[in-house]
Image (cartoon, rainbow, N blue to C red; front, side, top):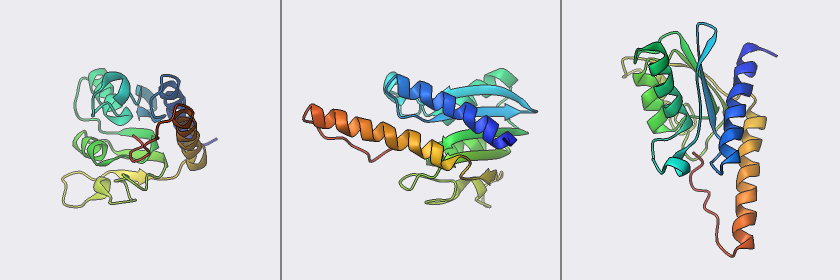
Length: 165
């Protein structure tokens, strides 16, 4: 197993923690100088905060761990392609590299809808590696939403899949 796959599996462990508490299963891990400095998973529903995405929570934890808002030499591993908000936070925190698993056709801003991470008009560009363990990361999400639809059907409601993170 290569290094990117190893750390993506750690991010998938975080995603599974989110799933266990009813959150959309998205996980993130930040590695700097060969060591994990932050781990987080989606907590948007739990905390009822729009910004409680895995990437934002991991960036916040990494800043506290390093004592700096600049996360130079850091790589963020995340199970789903970052959205616009998370891509902005990644650029602003000076993360060097992002490795993501599943593509997000409805909100992905690391190459799918647009690529904010490599936008040359910003003062920082991020290296992007896409599709690492994409099938496994995508499967976590699709199984979660399949179960959610079944639960909604069983109680007579309707499932909303418009946003995945």
